[in-house]
Image 1 (tube, rainbow, N blue to C red):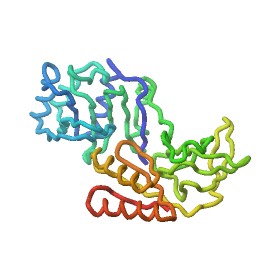
Image 2: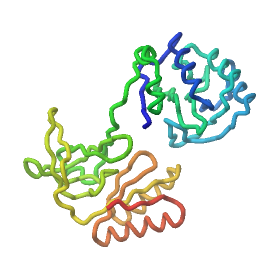
Image 3: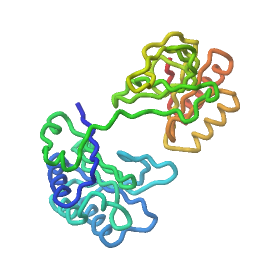
Image 4: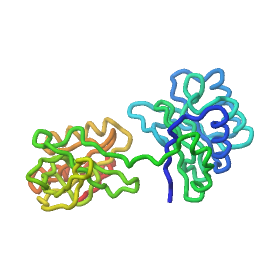
Length: 304
């Protein structure tokens, strides 16, 4: 089992050194990112040069663990974690929060042999995390855990900021997505009676559920509605659309769906969910999406 642990307090001083030393024992690779327009200089140049001396791979990318850029790219350096390179990393900063441009590169990551993350960071958000298996989690020093306030994060909550039937709804019902991260989806709904609700959004990941279906929910101790069962399906499905790192294709797909009159919602920057109604509009929407998939423009899946 993989444990995802947030580092709630950015380490510095002796805690920072202890953390890096512990992570060093689990890591084979290390990476940094340079997102600035100007080339690195000073301490940043020293670190980048050390990566290059360590035979770092250099890639121009818009995606790395913890980050997905919308309209720009960055240079990412990935190098074998040698003793010499580790010494440069330790000497470059007195704490994890110091890994910010222009003084230093950002998003320092330590990774295993398969390049899965051990310690990751997102400098722009002052955020860091550990990804550990059962044995690694058990071996994590308790004093280090207490010093860094390492904690299991709450499951992600998926929101519907622009639900398909926005005006009709009046309530939120929380539902499990079934995804490995334990996330829940906050479904925008219209309350029908004491316990039944009509779904007024297009579910992102909640299985066997679509726009217009009727569900049953119960109120928890805090007064929030929790899905208990699906009462009635209305013949609709959901098309999940994944778009390969290109906002222009997102806009192209949205324009085609609007022309047809199909309802859709955005999931993040590069995803859509589309209502596939049991009518002519639904057929046209599905045909349109299939054409885009065959052209290699999108990834497509149908969620019944």
